[in-house]
Amino acid sequence: MKITVNGTVQDTTAPSLDALLIELGYGAAKVATAVNESFVPAAMRPEHRLNDGDRIEIVAPRQGG
Image (cartoon, rainbow, N blue to C red; front, side, top):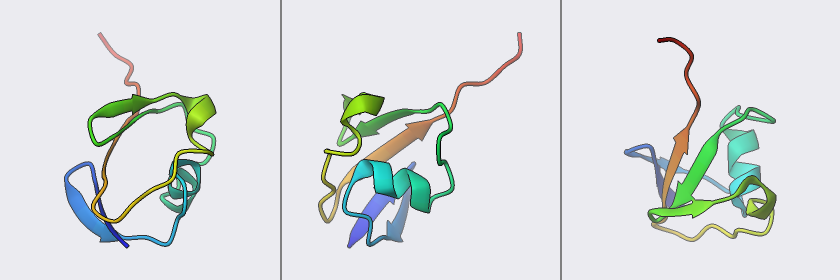
């Protein structure tokens, strides 16, 4: 299926948001996620099913000041 991740269209076979994060190399990294502009908490990622055309945003915390 085709999805958009952080503004870039790509193909995936990941059935869930959790599986997509693993596929993209985020693994257990602390990130914030949103699907179609709705926040998805970490605990809900395994149950959150992806659909063709979904827009996913993945934001990692940054350090600095």
